[in-house]
Amino acid sequence: MPIDKLIEISDDAPSRLRKTSQRLVFNSVYIVGIGVEKKIKTSKCWVYFPDSQTPFYRMTYFHNYSPYHVPKGDISRYSSLMCEVSYSRYKKVNRKTIIPKVIKALIDNNIIEKKDEKKIVSKFLLDIPYGYPVPTLGRDKILRTIQPFLMNNDVYSRGRYGAWKYEISNMDHCFMQGVEAVDKILKNKKETVWS
Image (cartoon, rainbow, N blue to C red; front, side):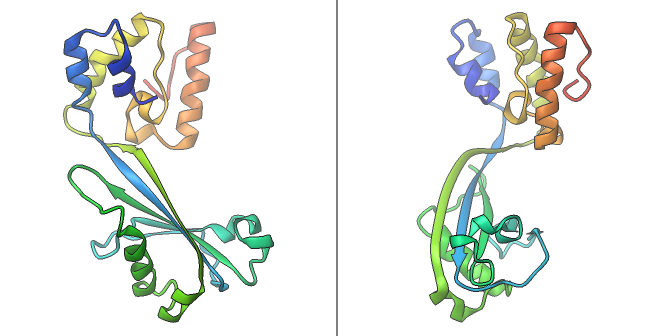
């Protein structure tokens, strides 16, 4: 659970802590999935798009991970693309128009061709309200007030949104935070990833 939401629903959290936790910044992500009846030949797994003209920051060739991401596992006939579009209160994205914009960007970036629009067999949109914690200048000071309160109440808030630290929020970091929190509780071992 995101640490700001945890504080929000905590009956014992002081009001100053509730107000402080609301200053934590995060972005959200739309996951746009596009299935195409066309073999897209590439050995790439994913590609980043840092330009402002492309609505997605990362595009993944899911069919290269597993044939089970396409109908009947037929990767000679189908391709599966996943595009990640970030949004926040600072960067607005229209949910109703994001799929056509993603398709246009796939064409503009030569991932698919204009004629391939007719070969799109599936479109998918998933809204992930909490995508990534944003490291801001005041974040660590805020966390230094929240985490001790929680730990004094035997709550070890870890993981991407439990620790709220982008720099240790990859899946491997998150799993290790969980392992180390259990080791801290049961064996009083030092946490190295989170601390």
